Structures are given as C-alpha cells and as structure tokens.
Image (cartoon, rainbow, N blue to C red; front, side):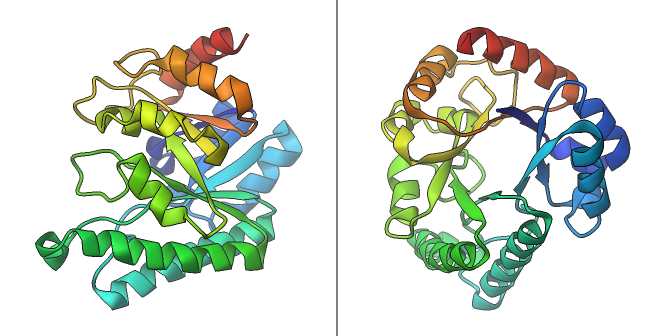
Length: 252
C-alpha cells in the first residue's frame, strides 16, 4: 500500500488533514508529535477508519528523543517515550512503528562511537517491548549532516543484528550518505520504506523523482521481494499526491 507522511501534518488540524489525505491515500504514517501526538488523536484515528477506510502506522516522536544519548537519564527517558508509543499503538491496533536511531550530542562528540553503542543497547530493549506488545518496530536510516548515527547500511544493520527487528529504508536519507546501493543489497530486511528525493547534499524531502537518487533502481529492487508499505514522505499533501502518481506509474 502507498501511504503518506509529513512532519507538517503534525502542525495542522487533524480532522481537516484526515479528510484531505483520505481523498488521495488509504494509509497515513502519523508522526506522534504536536497535533498528531498519540493519546490526543485516538478518536480521529477511529473516525478515519470508520468513515474513510483509512489505515495507519506511526512514526515515533523525533524532537528531543535520543535513544543513543550517552547521558543515561535522557536515554532512559527516550526509551520510556518509545515504550509509550508502542503501548498506545497496541491499544489502537496499529501494527507498525518507525523509530529513529541515536544522535551524537554533548560529550558524545569526544567519542562518537559511544552514541552508536548506546543505540544498540536501546534497540535491544525496544525489541523486547515490541515482542511484549505484538507491535512491529523498524529502525530508520538517517541522513548525513545532522550528527546522526546509522547513516550507513553497515551501522544500521549492526544495530538491529540479533534483535529480530527489521529496518525502515529511507531513500532520501540514503542518498545523502551515498549509500543507496548498499541498502538495496538488504531489501529482505526492509519492514517499511520511506520515499523522497534530494540532490545528495542535504535532506530536502523533494518529490520522489526530483533529485539524484535513482528512483527506478529503488522501485525495481522493491518490486522483486518487498511486500510491505511504501510511505511517501512529503513536505505537503500536494507534492505527496504528485509523487504518488509517479510511483504508481513505475509500479504499473
């Protein structure tokens, strides 16, 4: 199923967005922040299902949530936030949550590998929570230029190794890291896909065919073995609809 997600939706009235989105998409990946934070939008989710036949998956909060924090109280707080989202998804019968790996902040700049190490510790715990709640969790590759871990396929795969979790492949993020081909070697480990494009310099979130990422190569790889959802991450609904038309043309 082709869905849409956009951080801008979390800044706008939920009911209005739901009615607009449902005219073009059957799936909305909701960012649990702002106006769309889980716990405040539950009735809207039920309304979307009953009135429009919509499906939902969730992107865990990103703002100030760092599962790779080297400051232990903050890392544990981040885990509590992820646990809360997973629990709410279980109650709402939402089966998939996308989670960002850790970031390099504070004294972690003195030893960047420590943030990756703590991300691995956190992901092992998240995998336990995922199993306990019967909600699938995928860990997303991040773009370069924002002091993030897991910008490369090797780092992200090392984080999920042995946990049973799959990854969320983000085409635009991979393009900023020059890692598109490396990720496409591991389509069997994809549990979710985010599509958007850029020139390779920074995370622009342009239309899926507007940039240097080889969209056709990505779609060909996905068509061979991937059976999950594809989420268009757009800056707004209009550009998301345009991207959907392009994707549908490639998928045939």
